[in-house]
Image 1 (cartoon, rainbow, N blue to C red):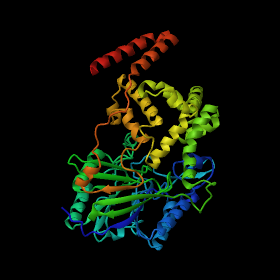
Image 2: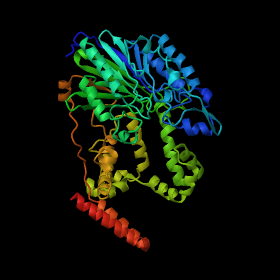
Image 3: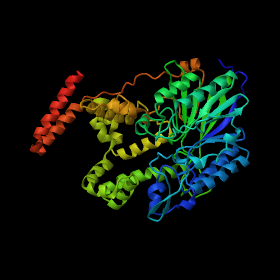
Length: 540
């Protein structure tokens, strides 16, 4: 076993996804607003936010090393690369050492769907040249790689000596030659060799990579399983944990999160995901590595203001949230109010063509009107049998609409530490509704676990509403396996807080409604009932 007793603590700054965007690409017009102007990240103001971050980082005299885990630029275009390198040099000139990796948005692979960057001119989006793999080689070596003590022969990964007793694996986790990310076997073997060498010399070693190894949210492992999370992550994290590489700092998801899990052999693994520097929230991690005491202290600083541009009187986090989440609210509102022009524009930015919106407008308008008016109180009534709440319990929710609650849930998912406590009404009502959804799914011939990897909708939604694990902002991470096992529970099988039997009732009502409304559907309804009955018998 390595001996870290003589290793002195060191303080680091961790940021990720700075997504630098050159203003020469265009910052106004319909095309810009569609692709970049209303995203979860700031584009036109990226340089200003980065400069504000530099000021805060330089104000911390206890940390002289800054880690940046990929997505240095927004689209990988030549102009943004040319402008961001001097900006990084400015931080170095102010006394900070930068160690970085690059990734998804910094270049393209030949197998990518898009082999171009974007610029915007009025209503037109132009395709412009971008960095390919060969273009980025050597361009960022001055920020860590040139001082590496070991280089991976098959990737851009390298080892940096952070201090006398601490090393960093700066990992390139793009699987070159395929769409996706992860680690080829030879890459894993090289990583294991570096870990063994570090431990043989009593050096504590940790890692920084772009893509999450553990999903920052259960939902993320479903919607991002092909390109946004490490392939075969369930096996990969165990391999890392068992080789003694227990701490990863990651980005890409733009979600502020700290997740942990144990390997089958009982070894702890932490994935500390940091929100994008130009995203919601604009976050800076402060990290104290103290291996001699088996602890890593992680704290968070949110950039609250920016003196380099006008935030319309809002705090910087609220300005960014308005930029992105306000678009979703406007999407629902425009559909509800029948404003097709606004609806179609926002829908188009979500890859829903105007022709499709027009085709289904007769359905969209009433559905969105209903959703926009839907109240929490109404859902509470639907779920009384599951929650056991009485009218008096949710009387105060009479005018509270569902849409803001959903938006707030999404905001908190990105910001970390969702706080709808299990004993609160909102948690109970939301999770009871998910229990109804699970009841319906169980009545249908759907292989839910095969599709999602989870046993229930409740298991997916629960962590999005309430964080029962490690605090995502500030935490003391125990890196000793024995000590960690005493403080952090191992993940048990998920037990939903509520159960529902409404699935068959919903199906029966739906079938009866079809029978009443359209006698033509009688044969189809009978077939559906027979299939469901047979499926139910098989389950029994």
